Length: 191
Image (cartoon, rainbow, N blue to C red; front, side):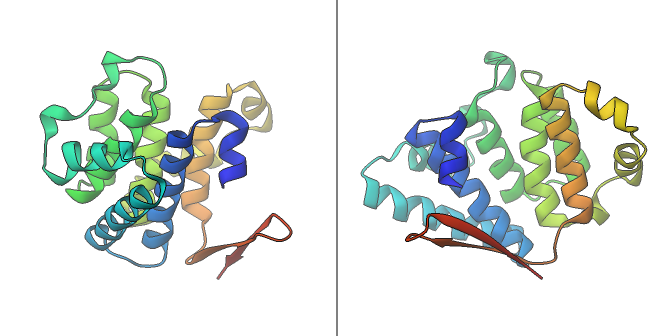
């Protein structure tokens, strides 16, 4: 995951945020409740901050989520371009407060900004938490009705959004990622 993130975002905070997002999704896929996954992820945030000495993400969590500081949350329409902090914090906010998939997606889109990315990140988190049964079947059906030519004509962001829905609809019941530091190769183990 670190190597994949470095391809597009060679920034330690982007790498840490991506790791924590995947860490939480792994917990959710492996049957943790939203509250358990949030709590364990927050503990991981604190643990990693103490090791690295960079408490930026810990500060984000404490200020914006753990204290229910909704007024401190970044608004997507304040930065219309992709802003990692916005997508990450809102996805954890919705998870911690157990928003439904539908209501969270509707809310993050209403906030404007980079709605495709923000909705994809929030949707990935809550889709992992609640499974495909939480996603309106019409949304899933739209993805499966796409023709190949339509897929080729999509922009990368639209494709990402659709791939998130497909992954949620067809994803494994359990996912574990193993990393071999000697060969620098990752291996996904799926049940």
